[in-house]
Amino acid sequence: MRAYLFSVIAVVASVPVGMLGFVQAGHWADVDLATTDRVALALERLLGNQIALEIEGHAKSVEVLAAQLGAPGSLEPDRLRTLMRNHIATHPEQSGAMVVDPDGVALGNVFASGQWTRTNLNYADRPYFQRVRATKATVISPEVILGRLTGVPNIHVASPVRDESGKLLAVAISPVDLGQSSAKARAVAAGLPDGRVVVVDAEGHLIGDSADATPRLRDVSGRPLFAVVRGEPEVRFGADEHGRPMRATVVRVELGDLGWRVVAMRPLSSIQSHRTQVWSETLAVVALALLAALIISAGGATWLSRPVRALADVAAAVEGGDYSRLPESGRGDPAEVAHLTSVVGSMIRSLRGQAEVLEALVADRTIELKKANEDLQGALHDLQHKERRIQEDIAQARLFQESILPVLPLSSRLNLCAGYFPMEQVGGDIYDACEIAPGRFRFFVADAIGHGVQASMRTIVLKAEYDRLKSAHSEPSATLEALNGRLIKLFPRNEVLCTACCFDIQLTSDGAQLRYANAGHVPLLLFRNGRYQPVHGDGPLLGGAANTWRRTLTLQVRSGETVVATTDGLLEQQNDVREMFETVALPTLDLSGCESAAAAMGAVLEALHRFRGPCPLTDDLLILAIRVV
Image (tube, rainbow, N blue to C red; front, top):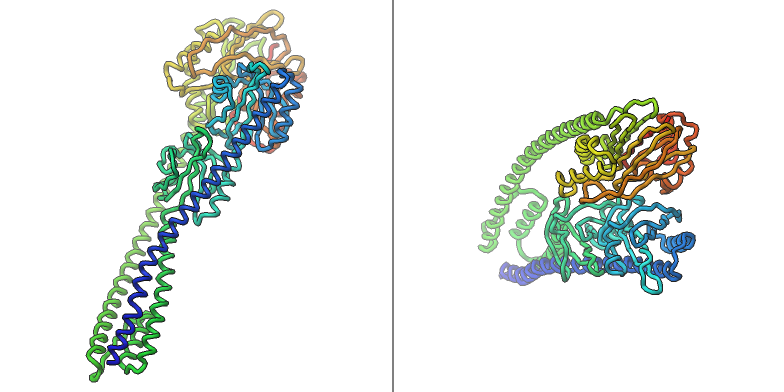
């Protein structure tokens, strides 16, 4: 009777607690996951609204600048400079401001430092400029790019400048620095355990990442996890750009048709680990409750005899990992206790067998891990070998690129010197010099879009096609037009897009005549009396679309003067305060003491290195110096 009472008390007290514990463990795990999703959505909406409000604020600030510029209907340079500097001082989060005329030509630029300059760059081909011209309204460009000067992600806000009659006088443009997007994402991600928050632009680039402090536009458009969200926020499952399984919530940034979205994600492994932890903690509470129930039952059945105590001793040994002891029943024990003793003995023997199986599995797994480690070592060796092969191939590519550079022609009336300094082992700049007729020399300088190996491949194609045409036309403009047509025919998807210039130097009795045509390239530098004068002509990029070049620009070069053809790697080089060589150092450069082209090029390089100081080269650099004797 006593044994029966003990059994009834233990079952009645323990079974409901155990069942409730198992049910509640699953419920708490589901509630925890749903709560995390709601928190993630709230934080994403907060970040999205913050981004939208900030961009709208930038748009309003540019509209204010446009209204100030158009108030008197005059764009006098001093007034432009004052208003634009005041705008940058009031909005330091914007990395600059520029005003362009209705044809897209820059009237003035102010950098974040407050420096004013007139670059004469043409923005007519920029989508946001074209949209302002078409809509006569403020435009927020959805395209995010790495700033050429700041090196951080930015977008452009453009607003029309109109006079009192509504006539379009100009367009005010300001790039908005998105460099703090990652910091904002990190602040949001702090509210998510093991969470990561990213901001994705309309084209599928990461413009903010809580896991990456360095601003860079990584393309994740091929990953469904980061795809556009059309309506309500979504919960998604998929792999991130590193292939890791994720659970993510996605909301769109509510700002017109900008197409941005905020994605908050957690690794499925972390979610499962947290779910397991919730289960474990709940089951631990259940175990404590069960233990309490058993203690209560034992308190009511303390009068049970030795068999029960013996079973308890054996259970304690099993709990400590000792499976060697088996319970024994006495001759006078109740039948129920004898049966319980037999069952417990069977369970202990089963646990002993399982422990032995587990030990064998651990031993086998150790051997497998050792083999896997050896396989990884072999794979690492293969990767290192492939890396060496790649470096050797790049070195060969550099030698090949150097081999296609021309041997400079010799002339008693022209002194030539060239220097090519790629940012990496190979680069995207190329030049050519040849004598196409007695006393007439033709020069060609080009800068292919991009850097490294892909840009060097473009220069090889570009040089080969130019060599086919360089002597076939009498004018540099006709040469560029023919080369452009050839590139479009061979590469209709603009694979060989580049800037270039082509010019002829015809020796005369008192110096030389220079005939010049340009294809979106930086100006020639004519050093007259030691100081430079820019020589520039409008022209579209090569390899973009069919175009007709304007007539060739003609000017006289006197004996003793030097012409320097270069690429934007020289003019746009920055120093440690983000000043450009073209606007700060070049106006002070004096070549009056240089008696040869080599001396002139050396002076230019010395000025460049002195200007940039510890800052590295930010682009490929090519310098072609021509001195008329």
